Length: 316
Image (cartoon, rainbow, N blue to C red):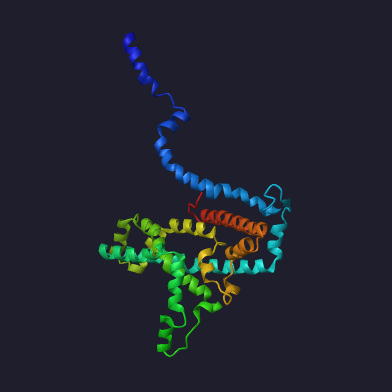
């Protein structure tokens, strides 16, 4: 009997909770796979946050962070006192909200249209074609747009063949925002449909079949069944988009800027680049960047609360 009891003890010890170090060693290969991603976020996302301290200083790169003079909130006061900042902020908000109005719904409509395609082969071909521009850099996209829109480009040739005068698209400040919107739709709409197509894959097919039996047309089904079914996904992505409302896309805007459209095209990102890199005003440009982050956080929290009041899950 004693021998049986002694033999059963090792099996009983398996119920003892393991220590953190033993669990870490047991799962060491999984943590090793996570290590490159952790190093990336630590190096480029977490450590640089501490650099925001220079927003409260008159930073001198020769003295360093700890020896530079403290100025408190003076750099943030300059944001609201500088008329150029206010003009740049207005441009940023105008471009960002225009993007939300025209660019954000585009992948929703495209995903719904792709979902209605019955032939799976044709559907895959269309998806491959619309995904492709996402993998092009903005340098390539802007170069293609410039070739099409230059005075001797194909768009002006079509206009002249129709009896209209040629248009200087790339130097016309009134056409700057529409061109930005069209380029963004062309490049990112196809890729953004992936999330909405995944949401559409979980639709209740029985509900759709019942609506067809009841005589609901295609548009009625889209409006009454499909859109409400993916409304949760739409709300979450809209909340995330509002968090970057002061981020208009530096690379695209920077590549399109010229002296003729700078009045409407200069946004916070390009302003920070000019102040921080070209003029070496590191403290003020950091204060502007920190201001962007705080505004984005407030918008996310506010949008999340509003979404919950309307019965949606929200982000948290």
